[in-house]
Image (tube, rainbow, N blue to C red; front, top):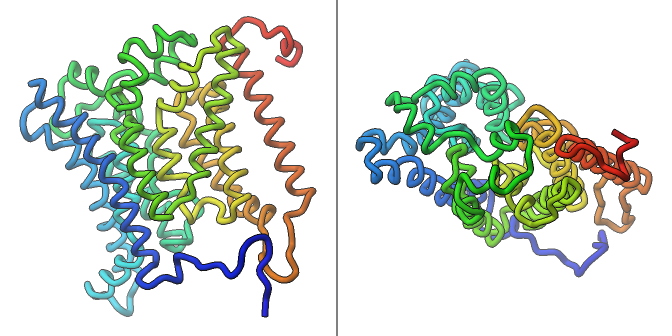
Length: 393
C-alpha cells in the first residue's frame, strides 16, 4: 500500500464526494459570473437609461451582448460536432456532447472581455476564433492549450480594435454617450500621458473608490473589482479555485507597481492600487488564471505561474506598446504551463520525489532577472534618470 507524504493522511478530496464533478464546477463558475454580468448591465445599460441618454431597447444591449456571446459559442460548437460526426449526426448526439463540454462559459467570458458597443459581427468573429480555433481544433474541452475566450479577445484586439473604437454598436450609439460611459480608460490615460500622476490617472474618474466599485470606463466585465471579488469569494468557498493563485498574481503587480511609483518620485499606495484596479487584472485573477486546463495543476506550479504572470503583466503594461498587458501575458504563459507543471511536480507516494533543485533554481533566477529588468525599463519610461540603475538602461 502506498504511503502519503508531506501531510496528514489519508486525504479526502471533494472530487470523491457524491454528486461532485466537472458539471458542478462549471455550474459554480456560471454562478460566480452572475454579479459581474449584473453589474455590467447596470453600469452600461440601466444607469445610462436612468440618465436619459438611451432608450429602453438600448438599455438591454449590454445584457443582450453578453448572453449572445454565450449563445454563439454553443451554436458554433454544436455545428462543429454536427459536421465532423458523420456516423451519428443527430440532435440528441450533439446535445449530449454539448452537455459535457460547457460551451457557454467561454462565450460569456469573451463577451465580458470586450468593450461596450462592440459590433455583433465582431463578437461573432471572436466567438469563432475562441470556439473553433482555440478549443475544438485542439480536441475540445480539456485539451486546449490556450484559454479560448482570451484567444478570441486577443485576435480581435490585434486586428479589429480600431473598428470597435469607431463603432456605435447595435443601436449606433452617439459618440457623446460612448465617450461618457466607455471612453478613454485609465490605462489609456497612462499610455498617452506617460505620467504617474494622481490628477492625471485617477482624478478624472473620481477616486480609487470609483475604481473599486467599477464606475470607470473599460470592458464590460473588467471594471468592478467589488463584483469580481463576490464571484471569487464564492469560488474559493466552493473550493473551485485556490485563493493563493489570484492573491499572488495581484500582489506581484501591486508590489512592482509600488516600486515603479517610488522610483519615479511618488511612493504613495495610490499608484499600485490604481494598477490592480485598472484593466483586466482582477477579472483575470479570478476567472482566467485559475482556469484548470490552461494553467498548472500543482501548488508550486500555480505559485510560479502567478509570479511570472504578474511580472509579465507589468512588463507589457508599462514597457511595451500594449496598455493592458494582462491578455498578452496570459496567452504567453499558457505556452509554458506544461513545462512549469513538470518542473514543479511533487509525487505523493512512498518514494517521495521533491521538485528538482536545478529546475526551481532556474525558474527563480529567471523570475528575479525578469522582475529587475521590468523595474529598470519601467523606471526609465517614467523618469529621466535612475541614479543607482542608470548604467543598466
